Image 1 (cartoon, one colour):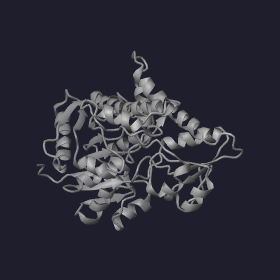
Image 2 (cartoon, one colour; image 1 turned 90 degrees about the vertical axis):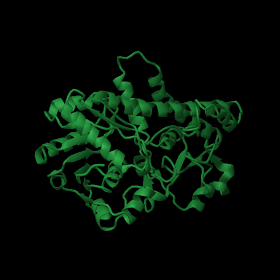
Image 3 (cartoon, one colour; image 1 turned 90 degrees about the horizontal axis):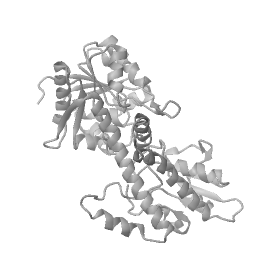
Image 4 (cartoon, one colour; image 1 turned 30 degrees about the horizontal axis):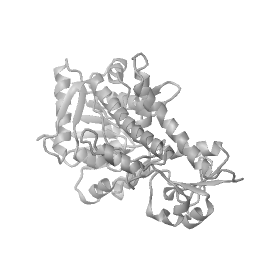
Length: 405
């Protein structure tokens, strides 16, 4: 158990930052930062989460957490023993690199306001970035700890982690102890016994994150291609998947066919790893990136076959979100399908309750009257099935075999 109550700052209150802030504020004083005063007020005054995570909502409402949120970086970082950086790092397809500017901004602020604080990067970053950032900034207090969180289960995955990994300078005794201490903070806050804590080099820890997510994306793609084969040959995809996955070496995780992988991590992590492997002999990692677009094109082609010969087909898109109990649209595969059917001459209409009050999303009309939406479309596509689609079952196109994420 950690005896001293640490002052911890968390930069960013997305899935990673907010779940980390909630986790650590059970035992320590945490000040989180965000750019939007409205979100800070929501957390401070109403004890409500700006992201969709039922467990975070419950913790905010019922647990005695030492957590405040501010838009003032100086307030958050001054006097902090530890700063966790969980700012977004979007992938830039032109540069073939994550945009790490937000991470660097935080590091420079921490160097100014709390130069002795240990800085733990939780944002997803390229392989080799921690080392280069330490050289660029001259800050020797930076370590890295990858996150392995699922949307809508972020706090759960922090409370019951499968492993805790911290990357550090393994030649620096002070930083090794800092890495062990941070791993200990996460372990003591978790509810799972005997969580493995692995302390390794910076670059090895960065590689763990990208290779782990690329493997999961590969698995999603494998079952999507299995599903494509079954669909084109008139076979029952679920029976094949059930038979394949009963092999204990394969298992039944990430095996429910979809329109493709998307969300916060998989698209950018697979592309970043491919960029990192530019000079490495490989074919598989490139295939993982390319097959996702192949899958979306196949889905679009199958949808358009259903309206072949119709002069002005209307394709309804049921939900933009990646999965159930999520409010994340980022790079959802269905958006790629939308663009491809539109290119083939179809009109696209969206039903998405989280866009309540909006009539348009990125140039596509939004209709959140479910009955009118179902009645007005020739085909309705849904990445994941919902019972409220039952009245339009004859119009529905989905590859969801298990009615789960």
